[in-house]
Length: 46
Figure (cartoon, helix red, strand yellow):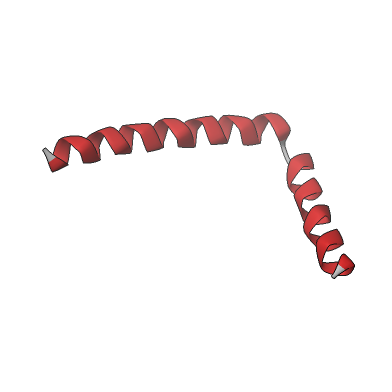
């Protein structure tokens, strides 16, 4: 029983990872730069 659940979770995780990789390829480095700016502004506002 436990093994079956683990297998299903692994398959789900691999699918999610594939989706994340696809998203990263689409957006490229632009999105990562935006995230950095957000954290910087938050720190400076404090």
